[in-house]
Image (cartoon, rainbow, N blue to C red; front, side, top):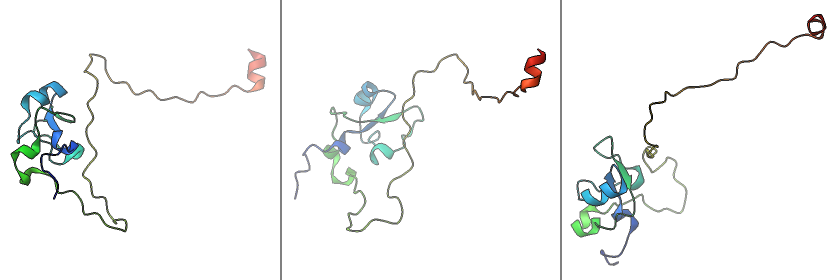
Length: 115
């Protein structure tokens, strides 16, 4: 059996608005039990890795994620959840503008000569 206190990256991922916030608030309630695919309870929070101030292994074996079973053959369906929400740059007052190229009518050689 392996040492439950051994460093495992998945035991150091916590929800927060920033890495510092995740470090200050790390607890069993803010642990990202599903790793990077975890959805934090608060919509303004994201999962931050490398939060060494807390170790989910300290809260008992029931908190460690079990993960998908390892098999010799590929699985037929994905074993992970939805894609993660990555933090975006700070909001700005600038509107989001979608720009599309609009095709311009071409001039014929005759109309260019008349011009």
